[in-house]
View: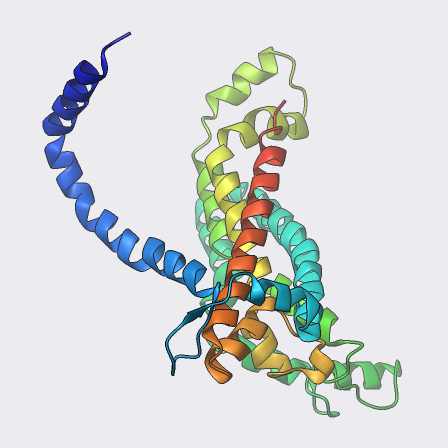
Length: 304
């Protein structure tokens, strides 16, 4: 075993030999620390304080976290809605992304490019909420209400985005429609990068159908893209906020469409209770981290 002094000298020598590599990494590292690590650290600190942007922050310990679960009934509603969003839209969106990417990958190159653009279009569209507001309009002129009334399914229009019975369902459908995002493109790229000779080798080893090829060859070769897609779906399903605000309003009827993100926005940008808003953000970050660890364990079993 090398002496500590020898190890330090060897480490310093290796760093000096790779000094230009570290120099090239320096701009990204500095920006990452300034705009990612530092803001997260500041948010964690403020989550233990009472800070309203007008007075100096005062340390309050765990008071903000206790307030979330003991005194804030709206937060509990937002937590329930966020978990519903995550448990429903997360897995379904993930499998939808991979399924459509798998089907599109089987097409000819020209048709594949067109199909990819069609499925990715909802993410590129800046007026997507306007379209859904027209579809779910509460009067007879709304596309969904008009269609159901003409079929004779109902006689009077339904306020899809105002009635507490339908708000969550409507928001989940819109979220699923918009879910073919970056993860979808990553899956297509991963499928394109699979070595086709592995399928021939697998057939010699006893793989007999496409589903066995998918499980034992394709998915293990796509492990990085699968993990990236899972992280993107976790983030998008837990951070639902703009959809709820744009369609159901802020706040929504009886907080039926309230999520953790909209609750955090309410306290951070309307009430200016930044300490409490930071505590909500830190709790959301913890939820996403735990979910990511769980998904990572599940994906590690793929192909085994």
